[in-house]
Length: 105
Image 1 (cartoon, rainbow, N blue to C red):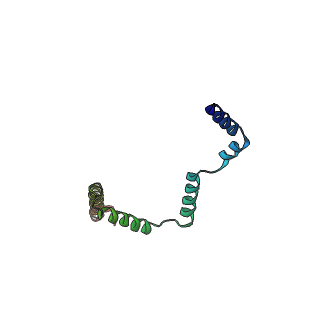
Image 2: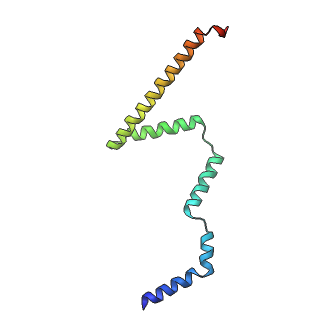
Image 3: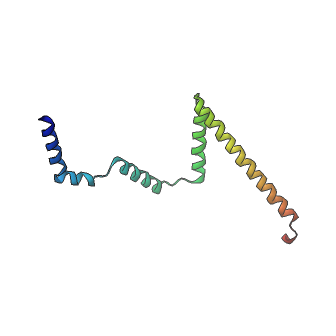
């Protein structure tokens, strides 16, 4: 009997106009996304701020004692070293092509 009453109450609440208005209310995720969008629009990160944030995050991960964080730290430094090596190779190739290019005069 109580299940019947509970189901009738639920049907009554779902068919009421209050249920329609509840669907119009923004969810917490919508509020969070809006707040993030507004913050990004008001305070856009520059490349320097992004670099500082990434280094702070990397420092926090590398200073952690967790084994998973240490693996992430090692992986991040390998990626950074590979990127730096590629940058140096590209700069060397550009410098070599600038000195040997006969049409550069």
